[in-house]
Image 1 (cartoon, rainbow, N blue to C red):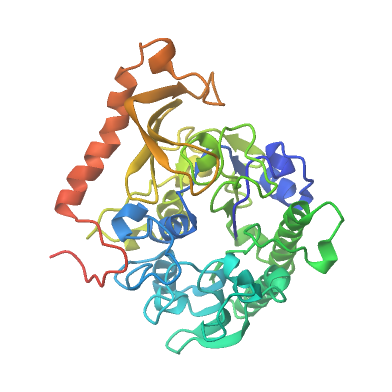
Image 2: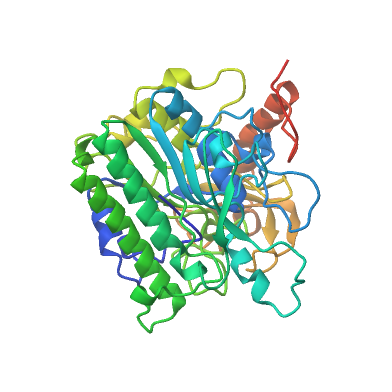
Length: 437
């Protein structure tokens, strides 16, 4: 289950102010990840989760702009988690927001999923047709569905009327898929990218508590997760089902959310721009009540989940895979996650910051909290110690000038990426790509 733009300060199990009893319970039944690191925008995080590769490698390091010519998203050559599990005999389904391609060949059912229902782009499209100047002759955003081998069909307009009901329908379809798969004795992979909390936020009538759309939608997200968890219980497969819940990005400035205790908002390079809530449950395997501050990246889910289900021999060897196998870490067999670095790359394809253990090196920083903020390059990289300074207020290159060596640690993964790209060039955004010679 992948939420959209939920901050670490939004859930009560992470210390947030909104009560989220079902997610609290899920976290208590498994491992809560306090140092889960996401990508700069929606598209790159989703591409990273599904391919185990840094978005700069797959050409998915930014969202497409409306009206921008050419295609975008994952090329059909990419081997997704859905491809891997489908090849291993799993039924696969995607219900919700895709944001990894909007043309034939780049839809979920072209990328390993047996079935799909949802939107190809982002939730903000729901408001397009409500604007008085939106041209009548321009396309009306649509909810679509497809099955593997068939063409995508338009189901209904995606507008302000359908927007508040999206996560209900996503949940209902997910539950139906779980029931069908379990009844047939078929192992299944459900990828459930919800539309909340992405603007426009409109409260579902069942969750409009008078506290504002943001809090109402957090409450709904919690309840929808609970409904899916109940369906897994009712199907009798809880003990043999791995459940992951995470957010694709942090909360954005001005929308009502919180990334506390970290500095920054979605779209910048601060910890509050990068960290998002995540948790995993697998009864009898993932220790109950475990809490970790070890670094985990979006692309680690690909390799870790493949290993947890015993299908890691299917991971491609003809391309760089950036995900670390954290199966032993998440099942309590080792304390370390296996990842020391996290490279945060901006929507322009250039590094913003690099985290190494508890130290954070900023090569650039956002001028404001807005997700569209310009990025300013430092003359000398800034260095912060997150253990002592979670708010990233004390640049140690200014206050002490004794941490210059930390820049060397940050350069290690950047140089490795550069060397790897010389052998395996990055796939340009929207390019048709058929592999390395």
